[in-house]
Every structure is written in structure tokens, then in C-alpha cells.
Amino acid sequence: MNEKEIMAKPKDFKRHLDLFFPTPIYWCDLKDATNLNENLIKNIEEWKEKDKGVKNTNQGGWHSTTDMHLKKEYEPLVSELNKFQQQVGMEEGYVHPTFLSNMWANINYPGCSNRTHIHPNCQWSGVYYVKTPADCGDLIIEDPRPGYSMTAPQQLSPYKLPPRLLRHVAYLPIAGRLIMFPSFLNHYVDINKSKETRISISFNFIQMASYRTGKVKK
Image 1 (cartoon, helix red, strand yellow):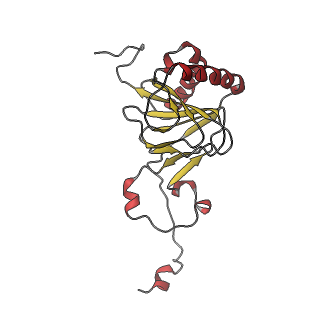
Image 2 (cartoon, helix red, strand yellow):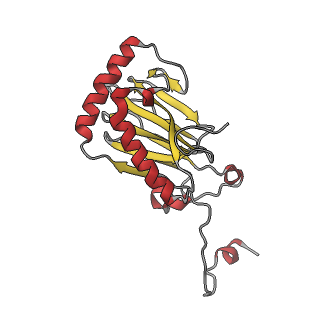
Image 3 (tube, rainbow, N blue to C red):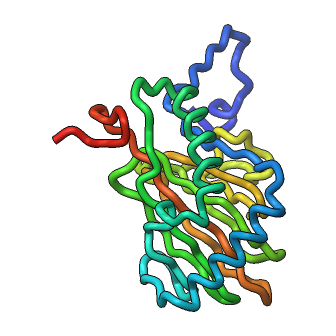
């Protein structure tokens, strides 16, 4: 069989398509985010002056400790995260609630980024954008199917492909936007090419079958 025969238009037939195993990514824009972000910027910058932070996936910049959700000044954001995660859990058919297990602030100075990583030991992870100057670094989320890379075909430009065929997606950081995705997804943050700082907040949610009133049965 030659190439022309292979590429020949097939005869008409009834075609079916099943799209199983989708990877959901949820997002929303918080209402009244301007006032919320003004307070977050103030509190995060004050926190940074008192704490040297930790080294994790951040390539430069400042990464806070992961107990941010326990601090009173961040309760308004924690409330919004919990409400949105509750909606996500309902959409995903969860039979037990999830809870916010940790949360931290990220400050990416010009030239800083975050390397590729996942968030182990949880179900849902995400980011909330606080300060996002132009060209400060997109969030890149990669196709989680390792087997697909072994026989990746040549395809049309990503701009011409439907979303289900993309190998990675780039989310533009927008202040006030909240994004949640499964924690097993590889993701990274591009280099901040602006001349200003980029501020975001990351977090994890976990479901525990024994979780009922905020206490874990032992």
C-alpha cells in the first residue's frame, strides 16, 4: 500500500467518538478581588521582611512557609478557596469533604521562575493570582499521559488543534483569578520577564475518608 492509498479519503461510515479519562482544570475570577489583593500584597510583603522563606520549586524569588492558611490575616482568601473547592468536589462526585492542607505565598522577582513539579499527597492544587504585571510568567500545565510521548505524531499547529489534543496549556496570570487542578499534573511557571514582582498564592486540598469535623480518626 502506497502513501496515496493510505491518505485516500475513506468511504463514508458511521463514526463514534468516546472521550474518556479527561483531565479537569477549574477556574474562576473572584468578586471584589481588588480590595482582597491590596490587603494580600501588604500582608505578604510584611511577612517577607520578617521571614527568609524556604527553597522549594522556586528558582529565585521568595517562597513562604506553608502555614499561610492558619494565619488570621488570610482568612478571607481561605474562605473563598474553601467555597470553590466545595463546588469542585460536588462536580467530581466526592462523597467526603476536602480540606485545605497547606497554603503559601510566592514572590517571583524579575528573572525568577518555578521548575516543573507536582504536588504529592493531595488531590487538588491550585494558584490564586495577587499581583500580575504583564509578561510575568504563564502557568504551564502538561499532558499527564507519559505513554503518549513515546509515539507522539506530527500534528497541526497547536492553534489549529482542539483542546483535547494539546500536549500542554498555558494560563495567563490574571490578578483575582483562581485556578484548581489535579495535584498529579506536572506544571511550572515561566520566567518573570517584567520589571516588577509577581505575587501568587499556592495551595493544596486533600480528602480523608475519616474526616468529619476537622479531626482525623487514628
